[in-house]
Amino acid sequence: MSAVRTYRWQSPSNIALVKYWGKKGIQLPANASISFTLDTCHTDTKLTAKLSEGNPQLNVHVNGQLKESFKPKIEQFIERASVRYPVLSHLDLDLETSNTFPHSSGIASSASGMSALALCLCSYLRDSDLLQGEFMQEASILARLGSGSACRSVYGDLAVWGEHKDVVRSSDEYAVPFTDFHEVFSDYRDTILLVHKGTKSVSSTVGHGLLEGHPFAEKRFELAEANMSSLLIALNSGDLDRFIEIVEDEALMLHAMMMTSSPSFILMEPGTVAIIKKIREFREQNAIPVAFTLDAGANVHVLYPAKFEEQVLNFVDKELVSYCEGGSYLCDTVGKGPRELTC
Image 1 (cartoon, rainbow, N blue to C red):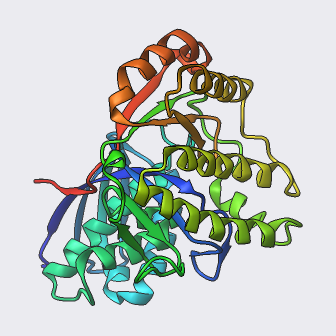
Image 2 (image 1 turned 135 degrees about the vertical axis):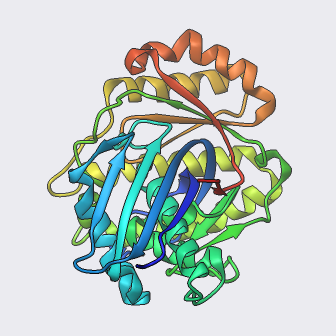
């Protein structure tokens, strides 16, 4: 009988500041991106693996419930990862996973989920003496094959994915940690306003595909590269005004690309637009450096330095919570990355 091994990892979601939108090849980015790693928004995954004695079996449980609908994406991921590590296609796998935040609502649940799974698989490969390189880099490579943004979630604080002239060792194959940032960003806050908790009307995979043949695609990639260079300088110097300008431009550009694709999609809700306007008014009236960003959904990430937390949360409660579904929002902070847990 083959040895049964069990691993458990907790891996965070992340929120991109310069957005990855558009693919080439097998899960390679059309432009470089950088993200804050979150803390409270994470996935807890336990994986039990053993060499199969027949046809490999896969069972997926989400929040304690068997989820057949999740299997095709996991199977595709295993198929891709098996090109690098053939043993993975010969394993019986039992996957138990849960999120601390709503699935498929634009908070990058695939990033935390696929990175947690990749970390579990790398633990198996490590213990089998099959791991080909440094643990976290291999986890980032594998995570990317399941979800592009997942490759950034294996690192804490800030992570860069995609080759860029201003980032040493940057690569399209895996993410690298970005450590050259001002102390003001080390405990940055992200208050996530849940305007819509349900599933997005368009998946990220479909959305990325819409960049093929998009009339503005090449200009978008050019601007993303320039915004990366500018944001890296702002992160290094602590220039919050420039940080806000770039991050908000990136968020709106992401949605502009979706709204001008064919077919087009509008993922913002009326509440999303109202929140954006109120954040800008609050910032101007109070001289508090609060910014918004968006993922590929209706929810709004409110970003600000930790020292302004009390003022911003008061503002959220008084002015913004009415736009949130059920009055719901999440309070998060820049996190230190994944953690291996006891099973």
